[in-house]
Image 1 (cartoon, one colour):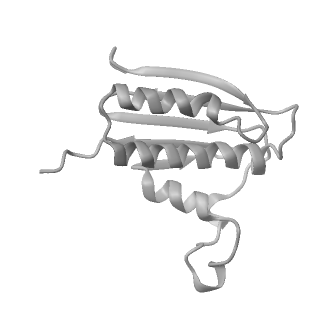
Image 2: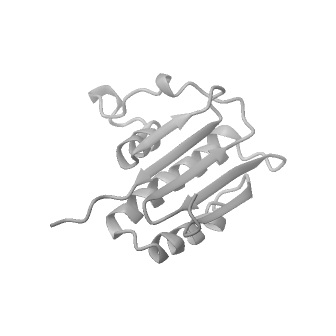
Length: 141
């Protein structure tokens, strides 16, 4: 990483609203590094989805479990890694929420949003960790 990047790691409690303990800093540093508002929105939404999924679906709101979040922001790249202490899941098994019979289903949207808003999304082998990366969009002419 270049010296112009910001990094932070934190262990979040498995409780609703805990994501704000890192997302506020993440948003601030995206702004400091001059990221455009559309990219900041995308990164914020994807990071929020990943953290909330880890707290609710991974750790099942278990107060004995933590969610580890690692963030890095540079002028060119934003990276967020989220790992929970749950059993993991198979991301390929999440049904496409855009299919007609899934439009009313309450789950699957977060994974789809992360995939559509980020440049790269990669799950670990166990399925309890996700790496989100966004490369800065080229400036509009």
